[in-house]
Length: 628
Image (cartoon, rainbow, N blue to C red):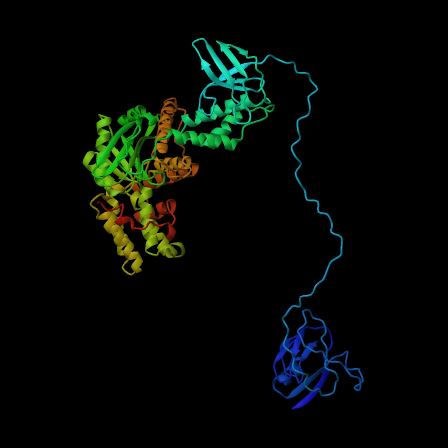
């Protein structure tokens, strides 16, 4: 083996050369080198030398270009610790160019940080943060305001106890001390442990005369405005029990306050006063199902139309005379329930809706509100029978609702000749829930064949009812070699939607229907939940909310009759409806095959697969889709 010496020159890459170990050299090329020393090197190495080193035909000894000219008898102090530098600065080289002896083993690094005292004596600079300036006081007006005579005003419900209060324009207030048929004796309202003012005012009709005793305290210039605002807030709070107290306060402040007013009331105090008043006015909230309804508080003699008891369950029904008139004439009812807004002892708000229509003006409105503590077939049966009692000569011919078997069974008993149509949105939603539960979400989102197949399944309700079963059979034959999950999905469709004894295929077919869903009802429920701030309302809070909705129905009826209101439809939906109508026309003209029709409709209506965390605890076909 030959030994060659050379210099590492230039400013190439930095690398390691170790004794009998392998290290890195980077330069014009990168490779492994073997050397007889350990240290840092810079420069480049030829590919020929590199190959000789790899084959162990030559040893290359690198010398530092700075140290090679130092006389050999001059000592070069070696570093105590050899560390990899943080930057490519030249490291300390071996002490001599002679065949070097191995350097001492590097000492372990000390990772302890010494804690020593120090002090910075620089002067601390003063910080000047940006701070908003205060609102300036109004400028003092140079105009002369003449004194005007003091005026008095009686404010009903102006005191804390909702009694009369007399306020004067110079900032004093009075309460009734005594009264006769002709006079009222008022005394100053400032009477406490520290100040007991004996100032009085005598009232005769509309004339007010101050007594001989003056006030012993300062006036309150804002007393009149504060009293009126407070009375307005409390009046509105008692009148609109469902309205937010904060909103009422904001409205009253906007109505009464001007730029020149001062000594204004605190909004938080007014909000608390409104809520305290409501709490005192409301009866105790029911906790058990057998509570007695406070009809006097609700003022609902012509609004509470049913209080039903079905063995251990209770259902309370509300509908105004105007709503009942509309219900009597409506030929199609839209039914839906929600549990999000009710509180125990009730579990569901069940509502009946219908469309108001005059020529091109159309709008759906709620007509019946039912608080239900249970939702079995006998419960719905009792509700529908009560509706037939309170609204004679009903003209209803059709129902649209989701696939809750208990409600379907009850409708068939009470309205045996009526047509029942299932909501296509809920049909697709039920199928997609099953897709998610079978673990097909990923396949649906990533595999084209699975995606198109499921979309065609979702388009089945848009076929003519007598075409749906043959189309499903054709699709079923293509699943012989499909995954077990696809086969389970087809089994679910057969059992729940084709062989179900509660509904037929014709009842979930929406072929040529302009209104195929309960989306208007769902939208009303969302708005109602929003007005309730998504809270579960107590009985004595939710009933006043029903009364407000009933008043809105009367206004809506008038607007529709004047053709001032219409059902809002997005442009996107109108375009989809136009394309769907065109597909129906093509299909009935035999210009499009069934599979192509399903593929096209599936492209138009494709709901997303729900996330697993949003799925109900029980399977749909085991809960709402099975009759009890």
